[in-house]
Length: 262
Image 1 (tube, one colour):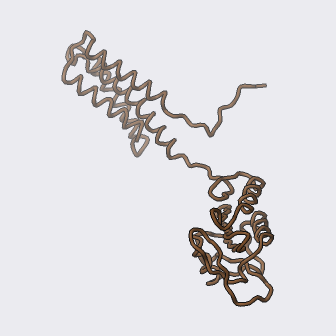
Image 2: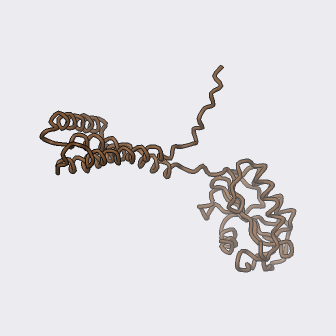
Image 3: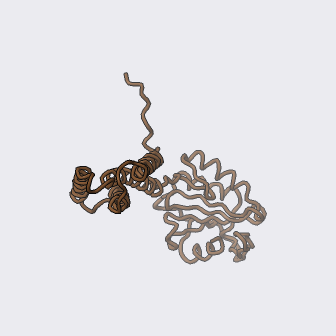
């Protein structure tokens, strides 16, 4: 049985090893060119610069087609052979070309690896409670319940729970009451619904703190803690419900009362 631990797929290379190796090869090549016994010519300096640029470009960006990359590599090796075979004429140009190409290639790999690491998608938590991520619904339920109980209508007067595009918002406090909105797609204003009370009530408004301002909300849209908690529990059980009960009303009433909590 193989007990060798497998490397985590989520762990990505930083490219630091390639960068150090490429830098060491490039520095060693420069030292050989200038401190070696071979003659330092203008061609050697040009080969040093061109080899570095070609190596970085090939392994950082690459050619559009794989065959073009292969042609570039073969051509680079042919140039290296020609330069090394004619040391008397070209001096240290062959050493400079080969060392710069290898060093630049490693630096290019390090650059590409670092760029891919930056672009790697960050896995978003399944649930969001007031901007905090939670992977399991049990964790989200605990955090959301704690946040709901902490609403006081003053320093804390809004709760937001999200699962993908679905979202539930509760605003207010125990003294003034709570206003509950939910949506299957938070980006679509027309999909928002507001929780209403089914009994007949007087046509009055109540001042409910909703963020930095106070909203004048119809009494039939203001609920006690138990009703808000039930709405939260229903959302946590089925955030993307296609059909909501008759107590959830969409349209102008839902959109207009939610504007205050944006």
